[in-house]
Length: 284
Ligand code: NAD
Image (cartoon, rainbow, N blue to C red):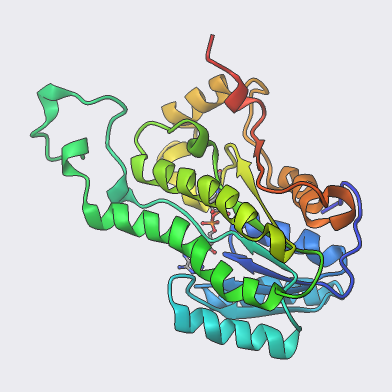
């Protein structure tokens, strides 16, 4: 990966939750290339270790840590390891997040003639457990790591937290009410935290990626039989003025800008859309 520009993160420790995932592994690698010591926290230890190994192979300091962002004990254990092996956390990237099929409706619009269709999940069939899973993963999965790692930031300067929101936070996407509302909560919480931590010297901002083809949304966007874009993927591209999906490296410049105290030291409480113009386009 070629960096868009370089910042100085030497002697900084960056913790990346969900850091074994498609987007966050690339973001973590960009932080490593700028000198940060990296802790990849992920449910999937093998993938976290593999991502950390790739960084070590390039000369960076990186560790992979098994961690569930929804369990306080797991986070406390991860934080103790980060402190012992890398030092106090300077930068927290809250990347763990995602959707669940049980928080997703089968159709964009309620079809009153098909309410009894066993093949379709209507609004009335949404499973509270699925909705809860999505809220917990995105919202609590941002709040709990922040409780644990912001403690390590207190009394030190130049620390920052970067959350991952989404397009669906600005204007909800059809079919995914739980994810949209949970990411709206992440955006709202970003602003709340930015205010709350402002006297403690910790900046809090968020990236709001548009549509990037990853594991999380693969089934929604690529037809498993033909390998072609689904109707939904085609609709997204039509609604994206730049006419394509984003590529993960296109999040890197905004991340580095927000991570750099010199570049964005007065930027606090913002949620930045990286979406090819999707959120600016009314559709007409
Ligand atoms: P991904 O599914 O590739 O990665 C998510 C990672 O989080 C995985 O490695 C997974 O193991 C880990 N994870 C899941 N639950 C966890 C838990 N409880 N504790 C610790 N780790 C856990 O997803 P991605 O597409 O790279 O998305 C990264 C972030 O960006 C997510 O917050 C997602 O909601 C957001 N996002 C993605 C897109 C997109 O188009 N892909 C768009 C907007 C926002």
